[in-house]
Length: 257
Image (cartoon, rainbow, N blue to C red):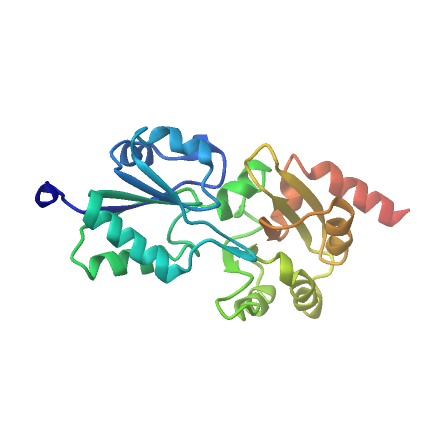
């Protein structure tokens, strides 16, 4: 029986949280899965697209709560592909944007297993878009940075300091624990009045948002009790959003008063 098994691994980006933001190609890949390995950021409602009899294994990682190490996940992908055939590795957002997807693909390929990638809608773009924040806008921002707040050695990425010197929109993922350092770097560049939006659980019913400037955002986070997982968006485009305009008009008036 096992001789007929054809191992295959498909890395599928589940999108930013709203289950409707899974791509059609992702739906088709899930429908053919024998095994689904899914993480904490992949909305479980997406699992309805997998066959009822498919083996479903949660391999999520959350701050301070690691079900499996990355090496164990890599091994699970390979073991399940060799044993059951078609494995779908479902990851939140896009698997190649801070998702360690390339490591999983390389490990599977080292065993001669065919691999495929279905890109996902990255939270770095979709979450701001849900708030009407256009990361680029003619005459306002001609580029954007997407940076991880916390690198693999748990430090703040050096790129944040470089981004603070630019006129680009800056999107920081996994940066909430480093917010005070981020604020300091932007203040050092005299960017204290730059608009900031922090969006927690973006595109889901649990979404929460806090809006302010570099100088005020830490107070906003404390007041609104914002925490991870959240995306930090820094730049003039934040106040260009029609959804957030009202806040900034009020903010300017209260400062004048």
